[in-house]
Length: 202
Ligand code: GAR
Image (cartoon, rainbow, N blue to C red):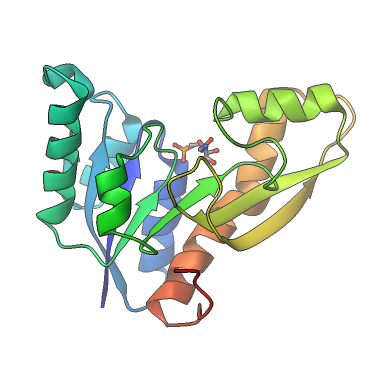
């Protein structure tokens, strides 16, 4: 059974998709062992508690400096000895120590077709604002492994989503979530839990 730890910062709709996929049997051989949020008010924490999942907040605001926060985050992760860490809308840059300790065992969902609209500063609604500004006709979502760079790790799954006439960033964000993110992230977890991902760059 793959022990999955999910890191979140906000609403947690991707977390919900994972919880539902485990309950529906779309993800097999995996269990969510903990949800960590950097934001005490994240609705994602309520979703976790509602599903009976251990949920904790590790906020930078509770620590004197970044180093102490990083150590607390690593400890909150290590306590559960996860096999896989899933960044589901986690807006904290992961400390290198965590990336080293969990190499090839951390995945992230990003709301665009990487390498478009990704990297530093591209998160949440901003990604869709930039896609609309550029006038792309197709966007989508990407699940990838996490390495030391921002959105640079090996791509696992991608799905394209059409931009439609009159889209606002909010409308496009919702469509990308519904048509791509909520499908891709559970699928990637199920593939990892069932050893269907073989090519990992070391
Ligand atoms: C999602 O759209 C996710 O792709 C994005 O944050 C949102 C979180 O929503 N992540 C990033 O932009 C990471 N660079 P959620 O809390 O409802 O799952």
